[in-house]
Amino acid sequence: MNSERNDEHIETLLSDILEIYGYDFTGYSRASLKRRIVRLYELDGFVSFAEYRYKIRTEPGYFNRFLEQITINVTEMFRDPEFHKTLRTEILPRLGTYPFIRIWIAGCSTGEEAYSIAIFLKELNLLHKSLIYATDINSAVLENAAQAMIPLSKIKLYTENYIAAGGSANFSDYYTANYSLGKLNDELKSNIIFSTHNLVTDHSFNEFQLILCRNVVIYFDRPLQDKVFELFDGSLQQFGYLALGTKETLDFSRVSKNYERLKGVKIWRKIH
Amino acid sequence: MKACEALVIGGSAGSLDVLLKVLPELNPELSFPVIIVLHRKSGKDSILTDLLSAKTQLPVKEIEEKETIRPTTVYIAPPNYHVLIENNRTFSLDASEKVNFSRPSIDVVFESAAQVYRKNLVCLLLSGANNDGTSGLQKVKQKEGTVIVQKPTSAAVSFMPEYAIEHVETDAILDTEEMASYINNLNT
Image (cartoon, rainbow over all chains, first blue to last red; front, top):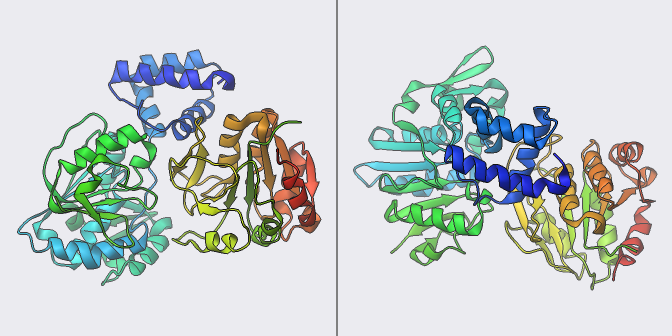
C-alpha cells in the first residue's frame, strides 16, 4: 500500500466493510488497526490497494480471513496469574453465595480464559451451578474454542500460570495429551456457551454477576469504550463485578460513578 | 536542521546500564518526549519506571493507553504490550502477537513513530541479543528520520546494534558517553 495515502485507504476499507458486511470498525483505535491491515496486505502479496479493496468487497470468504487477521486473538490460560488469584480467592467464592452464577467473558477469543475460570469454579465446587457465556465477534475463533484443545508447547506456561494463580490440584488433571495437543476435559466445557456477539453493534442478552473483558476495549476509541462500558453496566447485576485488562480502566467512563474499584487489581464492583 | 519531535529508544540485553548512565545527563528541559521500549521479563512491575525515575529530573512514567504524549517527559513501555503512536500524538497499546519474540517490540514502536513523526523523529537503538529494531529503523530512514545506534564495541551485547549497522544507513554511531550530549543538542 502506498504509505502516503494509507490513512485514506484505511478509512475507505472501513466504510466498505460497514456497508457490505455490517461490521463497524470505525470506533477502533487506528494505529493498531492500520498495522494489521497493512500487514495482511503484505502477507497476502497484493500489488495495489485497489486489488485488496476489490477482494475484500467481493469475496465473503476472503473477508472472513480479513476479519480473523484484523482482530487480535492473543490469549493464554490464567493470563496474569495475580489477576486470576484474586478471582479465585475473592471474587468467585463471593459469587458462590448466589443460587446460580452467570459469567460473561466478552471477547473470549479461543476460549483459554473461559476454561481457566471453569477450572477454578470446579475447584471451588461451584461449576455445577455456573453458566459461562463466552462471546467473540469472530466465529472462527469460537469454533476453535469449542474444540477445547491446547498446544502441548503451551503446557509449561499454563502450568506455571496455574500454580502462580493458586490452583489447588495438578494442572495435568485437566487435560489428556494427544500427539501435539492437550484435550481439556469435557466436564469443563459442559457449563460454557460459546456464541458470537459484537460489542459494537449487539445488545445486552442477560444479567451477570461477573463480566470479564480483558484486552478488548484497549483497541477501541474513547466514545466506543464508553458505549461498551454502558452495555456492560446494563448487563451487570447490582454488586456484580467487571474485570478489565492490566492497562485498561473504567475511570474515564460515564458509568464509573456506579462502581468501586478493588484495591490493586483491575476489577470494579457495581455499587449503584 | 530538522526539529526533533520525539526520541524513541529501543534496547534489549545490556541496555539498562546505558540508560542509567545517559538519563542523569539529560537536560531536564528537553523540548521533546523520550519514549523507551526495552525488552524485559513480563510480569507486573513498576520497578523499571522507579529505577529510571531516580536517575533523572525529567518526569518518568509508564505509558497508559490513549495518553497524550507530552514533551519533557520520559515514557516507559509497559511489559507485555506493544506501543503504537496515533496521528493525534497519543499512545495506543496493543497486546497482539509477539514480534521478533518480543512484546513490546522495538520494530513496532519505531515503525509506528516513523509514520507519525516522519523526518522529525530520532530513534536510538542500544545493546541487545536479537535483531529487533532493524526493520523499524529502515522505516524510520524511509521517512527521513534520524537513526542512531550504539557503538557495538561499547555495547554489553553487540549483536543488535551490529545487525542494525549492517542493514540500515545510520546518522550516528555513538559510545555511551557521547549519547547524552547528542540528545541534549537535539533540543530546540
